Length: 580
DNA sequence: GCCGTTTTCGGCCCGACTGTTTTCAGTCG
Image (cartoon, rainbow, N blue to C red; front, side):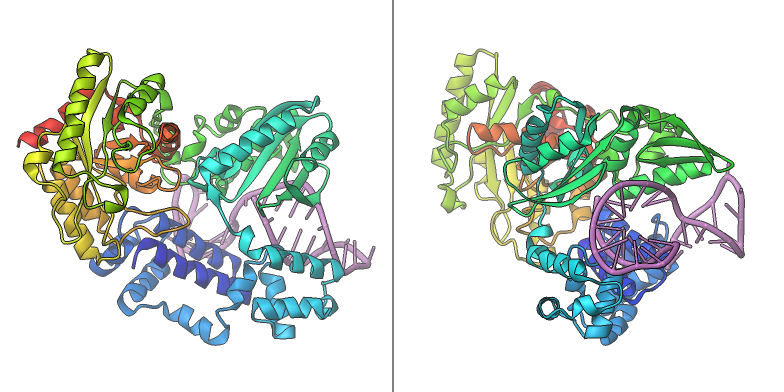
């Protein structure tokens, strides 16, 4: 059972308790525990089995959650959750997902009308039964019906890269408003989260009405969900939601801080303010004396954090993980930037499944200001991609030798390969061939459904091979599509550290593999990360920036990123291990 | 249920908007 699965069980427990009207703080505690488990780089199931005492050392996990973890991994269920499911059908959890319907109203509908499925809910609304309940009316009934038809689309998160395109379009659309003096996008998009559930736009303007009218006229705006004096929400044709807030200039920083989140980070910020006799909200930081509130700060985020005795924390780090400890110790990492990246060590050409030739990739990489690249086409086992056998690989490598001679050191092309880790273990090409290369990646393409032990064993064998420099897309996950393979990440990290190897952060927006949590764990263990585009075309080289965003979320500095070094410096990391 | 440089008990972030209300609860972020 992996961390995500364990966390999901606690979230279900919290949902059902909320449905029952249990103590809100108890519910919050379970949700908090679920988040800590999900965010942990350690394997919680292993911890629960071998060293349950250490579970309680995790911030936000106390006696109750720790015990339930042990129950869950040893018996397969949390007893309290199983009991609740005896009383309440699991299908009501779907009702809680309907936008506009929270725990209170859902419970009301369940208790009075016996509604426990989405279909029954629709029928109850259509037959006008819902409006008869106390506190409900025709409008609420319609809101639920609208929410029902959106329930599927509403939960869908889009890739950060897609959100980035949308953000650019909205920015462009709204900047033409004469009254807009500042405009920023906040929320999980600004934090660089790998997927984004909605967009939050923050604007300073003398005329909220003008900005709201303009947003309503955005191409693809399907409906206006709500519109007040300072706040507006719209839904796009795709079902994606966009929220707008209009604030005065003196509140812009406070509002930006507030709407950038995360929720957990903000709770910690406001808690900190309370301890200092201050109050923080989206309008500013206030000194509270005898019920009187005096504005202290709020025009910029720097001001807001400064008022709380903190340096400004970069948005990517605002997840209530390590950032407050770092900030207090004056040890916030100076995060890696796109301009720090000097090489790209994973890309394909027309020799296998790429769309551009070797020469085209070289000149495109040079045009992007890189100093070196590795050509890493697939090996022969990846037949779908027309993978290279030893002869074709050597042919490509002699071609690379020729190109390097012509380049006269102005740019370096490395003889590379993305070597498949075979299903039964071992590498797809013999060591004597691999040894002739400059940079060999190893990665898994087949047998992804194998057991945790098998997958881990295959990866460890690759790490131990002296010809292998790095493991590409180490967990194999595809966002929104495919879960990571079962894998003992701790064992992999340990081996990578022992053999002086490198782990890839694949910058493809659908992969972003390693994720932020594992990047942070790698940094802590001094394992270098290489950020690669895995480009299959010239345009594919431009995804590098998505990888950099993910690396920043993991707290990586230039020093932590292998390809922020020159190729000569990078070789010093890899070579000693290859010789030993 | 969790937590502690005011606390091992008594707190636990804060505000906008909507609908169904005669003053506020529910939902959302």
